[in-house]
Image (tube, rainbow, N blue to C red; front, top):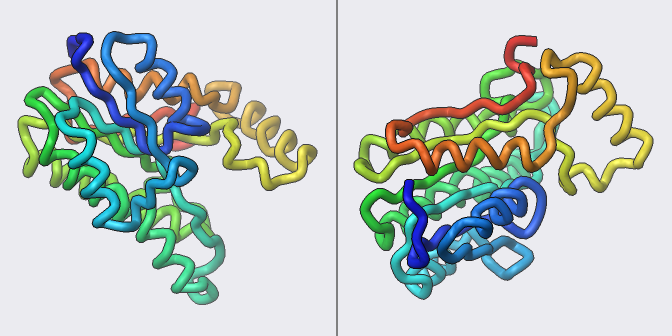
Length: 223
């Protein structure tokens, strides 16, 4: 896609992690990058707030959704369903509302790129909430690619990536997790936000890509 001085890209979740890397990459191109997240006061679980946000922005060209939610872990029999529903409200329903409202003000040739995760298609006991959210998002993106055509809708599915999402872990536990990934993944390393950002740029730039799930996970799905 051609970027000009009038191109407007919106990165939801762009204040940290993968979203910040995407926003940085886009800021090096012509045009304007709008960044929003919980840190800036945008609650994507609030439909009215999201609608007002896009109405105030006006015409846009690209929407990138990297905002996530804290999904509870555990077996299906033991999970806190209220916490699971709250996670869905943000990661799944929030993404759908963002796409629905953004599409109303998106120029021809526009793109919407969601974020899922490799657990959507990797069976790991105790992670069913993340698996269900991400799988639902990937499936819905394909429907949206038909319903919103010729806008292009895609999903980037990252693997383990070194971001602030793991700041709650002790330094030793975090280092051990990343070292284990580097030792066991076919790629021989864990992901960095800049690695994942390239997937979003690909989805935006290639006019023949829509309804796709772009895996950037170091080979976790074949491991």
